[in-house]
Image (tube, rainbow, N blue to C red; front, side, top):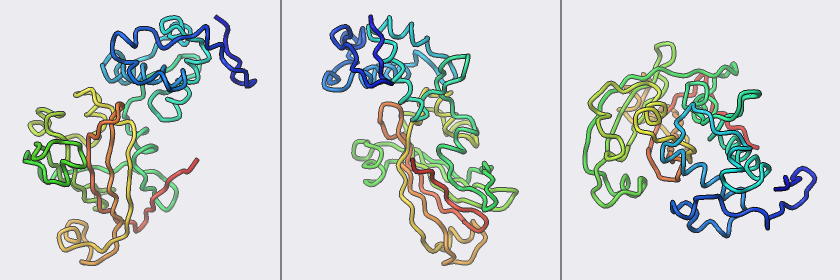
Length: 265
């Protein structure tokens, strides 16, 4: 098999490559034939992560091993892994290989937590759960999480602090069937790490909407400000590796001493 010279702009010898081996008999290749070959490889690798073949923090086989198994060139595998690394799905470690990304605090700080101190320092706040309940979802909750009408949800409300001072009050809505037993044990500060470690659900991306609003009476009391004080509303919908919505989070944030930082590339 010839290695495609992607850097030089040469086209891969597609006649020598085929759809990722084994994809069809597992149902992984369905609907993938119209996609570029490296995207088909990416879909196959992500499906294996979703199925638990490789857990967060575990190494993937080498590019050569994956290429041989999937029946594609090493360059095609590398291009798929490059895209996955750019999306923070995998982490490349020089001299050690490629690993499934894990939701440690450092990753969350840079990928999902965008409040940065005005001094440029990134801070990971502490959390205190104020309430947790199981209930029938509202129409808006079920629509956001792609649940059937009156689907069951888990609601978590918590206060996040920095150096003991209130910073964020947030409400989280989760599909109850995805997280059995979550409400029956202590809820850790790093929820995304819990989703991955206990339930095998990795948050791969999130969509956020931001808006400046005045704090209502309840929010103001929890954040120790006057009603109507300006706060930043962050409305986030988080998705798993396979694109399933797994969490709807609404946060009211104080920005005195902090700002929202997003690197656009």
